[in-house]
Length: 99
Image 1 (cartoon, helix red, strand yellow):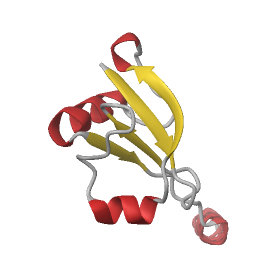
Image 2: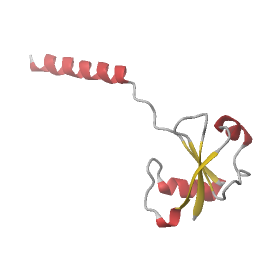
Image 3: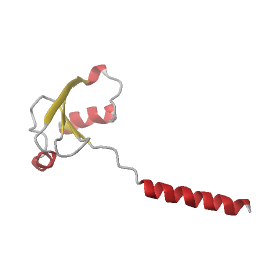
Image 4: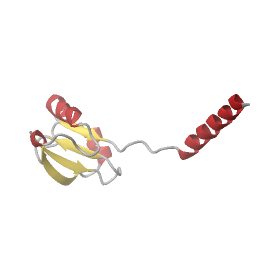
């Protein structure tokens, strides 16, 4: 199964997988408007791969077969302040339990 991968010039870390190079007919117009002018990154043979860097290959294959495209979004940005607060709270609880 071949697919073409395009990156978004507007959304960092956002990629669009389609079945045929330069055939965006299956991609909804509002998505393409938000995505921006797709920039070709590579053409992949998914049949010869076991995994992809940041996407679940089975989900990519299923989406390509069912809807003709797969949109890969960047992973969510970690909120370091919330993580720090949670760690402080855990430390405080552990200290109170030790007393």
